[in-house]
Length: 124
Image 1: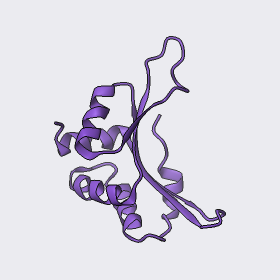
Image 2: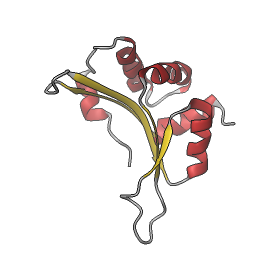
Image 3: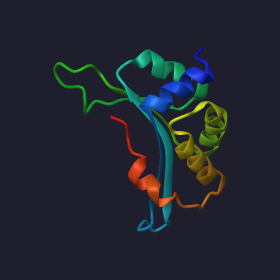
Image 4: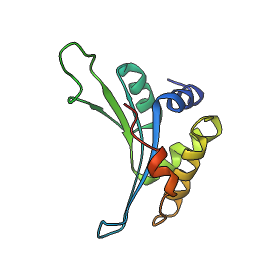
């Protein structure tokens, strides 16, 4: 099983802590997730085994001559809260983004800070 320190380092480099606010949506939706896309499936499976979440095969990328690409995601607020509380002490580069995502998870209707829409994006 992968250590939380290894996973934090991997997500610091390869992951994305996302929080998007959709004010035009009828319910003023806030979308939260942690995402990591990679071509090496065993490490994503190790993250899933340790933290949960789901792994998807990114079939839009699988064209002739390219390695298959996989995406690990977690978006359930309860799971995000648990995972972020475990990861944050070990994050360096993305600690601030993870802390803001955790704060958003703890306050159900809280919007994300405006910088997140520009700085938090899907890694690909």
